[in-house]
Length: 504
Ligand code: NAD
Image (cartoon, rainbow, N blue to C red; front, side, top):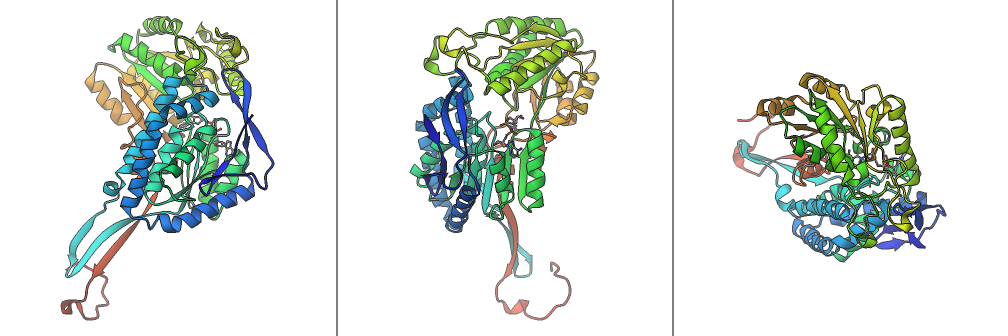
């Protein structure tokens, strides 16, 4: 069986003080495929010390030296897209095409980071006072810890470390213990690209490992992505330890369909965004808000599309044709999702399609963690299936009479990650975009994930901290601003003046 360990100082690190391990499973078969180490104090200290040492020279490395490494890393990632996608499918369960999509979106952030020379340019004002000039500098913070969720084992770490490292920081990544292999291949590729030892480290582990990092005096900043309760804990703990923190949390994304919308387009989008990656995306649509008389039509069109989906193992060679949707990540998570379907039914929602107990046509997959696409109609806001983030292939349809009622739902919702409006009405769309308290808004786009050169982040309980990830906000998070005022000896500027500095 494969053993997955840590990556410290540009090499696979042997477990020293911690004997603890966890198991990794193939979600399609339910079989244990690897054991992953759990970093204790020794490994956390070693990784942070390595990152601290590397920071001294990496932060001094020229922009062109850093950029060269980024370009080489981008080429190696490009050559290994398929390999990375296979590792993701084997441990997460998502289908190969989806895993490849995740890798591609991660590489886009590396491409953004390749332009760091342009991005780090700052302002200069000449002659702010006689003979005086002023300019600003953006300087790296030091050691950044990144803590990431299971659902994007390559892309979410790549939201963070390419920007942090291009800005001159060093990085310690703690990936999800459920699918840790992608991070190790990424670390190897970065080393092959010429990244000096210690600039990028990976430590495997669980909540205890995270807590060691959050309280470690050698860590200067923390980037976190995961569920809302843990994001709150991370934000509070790391802030109290005087670190800079951005902590992205969970979501409950609504898609509002107005009566003038293209219903076929809306149904396609609801199915793609609701069931893609088995609903295990923070930008997945989990609630369709059917406005006016659109409910019956939408339920009909969504059901037809569900019936055409092929559910099966995600690996490309697992069967023909390739599956559209794979299993859930663990047996425990599958049971949790099933319990939400039970509770929705018990609370009076109408079960239009039921994914419980689904079997897939593959003998190896009898013990996989399967739940089929599930559609609940007449869901109301007091039901748990509406209130909680389910993170599975369960789409709820809430019927409302008016646009204002739909907006009121969104305002009352504690989350604010993504939202989508489907309409042909430009006026409605314009006021929606302006008024809605959500960080990422789609107009006739169900999953409005920003490109790498924009920034990704939600509002309300979907983000704790001030900065979104990657793009300009990422650069701001990973750098500290310094304002410099200077003058050079000139006889005209001599003389004592006790007044407060003023421009003249
Ligand atoms: P999670 O919160 O359980 O785990 C995230 C990370 O935190 C993991 O590395 C895990 O080891 C660690 N962790 C878990 N429990 C901890 C604890 N008690 N103390 C300290 N650390 C702990 O999340 P998950 O189940 O891996 O991922 C799914 C969640 O992530 C969903 O809620 C999803 O919405 C969210 N997510 C959000 C975004 C976003 O951009 N807002 C993106 C992807 C995923």
